[in-house]
Structures are given as structure tokens and as C-alpha cells.
Image (cartoon, rainbow, N blue to C red):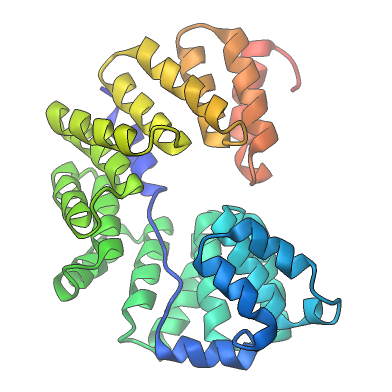
Length: 324
């Protein structure tokens, strides 16, 4: 079984933050000009999950439009949906320079900051938003996640518990409470909350992967295997699910099976830096330093945040004796 600290760390980074959708934000977005006709197609594409087309549509707009805060805001939302949180931060910060005081921009900037590991800055923004709108549940959830990342664990968990009591069918609140509980080592609560999240949203990919890892950490091998199998059956070509399946197998001591799943994840998505990292980590553990070095190099090449790869560079140097 994987060490509990390692499982908790894996789960905590999966916590979600949400872009607020209250009436106040609609007014804020109108003030940004995002509600206008020129951005209608981009908004439609983003709602439909067609983020590549949305980015292309934004890139084709006139130069004068690309100078507006609304354009930078929508580009930030697009990059955030693509997983380029670092790029999203830059776009939201540019939108903020051009339109200071926008709660919509500050909220989504905080979302991106949490995802790039700048939780302290996100917390400051969300504290101000929470003070102005203390009853907004979305802001409260984002603030709890940011505070979790900044080390305010007990307060974050307490906030999430209150949100679950007030909104028992809110998937994000259940899901985040489950991951927060896992991050504190309370895997029994994590399992309960993740199962409740799946009651609200059956078959959710991330919740299934997290449930499998939480069950494994709590000693529930049957539950862990059931969640892992369901995730793999529903999403057989998803790199995150393949990696989660690999983590389950690794936790059960099936290192060959885990390595095969990690390797398949890199085949399915060669740009998945986390997939390359897990392949390298397990290959190194097994003494296959050639595979480990190759995987670590690919992880460094594909990582969207260069600041986060220094530890992997150190591992690569240790096993190759070079200055890679």
C-alpha cells in the first residue's frame, strides 16, 4: 500500500475551485463587455467545452478587441479550461490592470492562482470578496480551497462541512470536503464524502479516482478496486484514469501492472506531464534508470509550470550523473 502521506498529497491537489455564477457576476461581466455580441460565439464554445475553437476565435478577433479587458478575461477562462493555469493567471492579471475592482476577474484570478500553487495570493483576493459578499457559497468554497492550500487546514475543513450541511446535493462541496479530509489523514470521512459526491454526480471521473485512492488508504481494498474498475470501464482512454488505476495497482503491490498503466497513459496522452512523472518514479523505484531518465525528461518538457520541475531535475541528475 502507498504511504498515507503520499495518497493524501495526491488527493489534495485534485481539489476544485469554481467560477461563480451568481447574479452579481452577470452584472460584473456586463461591465467588462463580455456579454456583448462580439463575444457571443466564444461564450457558446466555452459552455460547450470546445476550448480549442474558443482560443482560435479569440485569436482571430481584431487587434482593438484584443486590447479590451473582456478579451483578456475570456482568454484567461479559455486557458484555465485547457489546463494552462499559468497562462490563465497572466491573462486575468492583464484584465485586472485594464479593469481594476472587478469581482468577477478577482474570483477567477484566484481560481487560477490556487491551481498554480499561489494559494496565499488567492486567499487574499477571496478574503476581500468574502467580506463584500459573505453569503456567496461559491466564494466561500473557493476561499476554503485556497485556505487549504495556504495551510489553514482546520478552518477550510470546517467551512466545507458547513457548506455540505447547507447544500447537501452540491457536488463540489462534497468532493472538496472529501479531498480535504484525505489531506488531513481522515480517510474514513473522505470515503463517505466522495461516495456522497458520486451520489450527486454518478460516474464522475475525478471522484471515482479519488474514491479509489481514499479507499485504498483506509484499508478498504474491495471499495478501492470497485472504484478503480468503474473509472477504467467508463473512461478507458483517459490518462488520469489510467494513472489512477496504476496508483491502485501500485498500492496493492502489483508494480508490473501499475507500470503498464502508467506507460499506457503516456501513449494515450504524450503531453501529460503527470503521466510521465509517475512512469519515471516507478521505473526508478524498480531500478530501470534508462526508462526513468527518459520519462523524467519528457515530464520536464511537457510540464506547463517550469517552476514545479526542479525536484524532478534533481532526480534526473541523481540517476544519470549529468547536468540535465
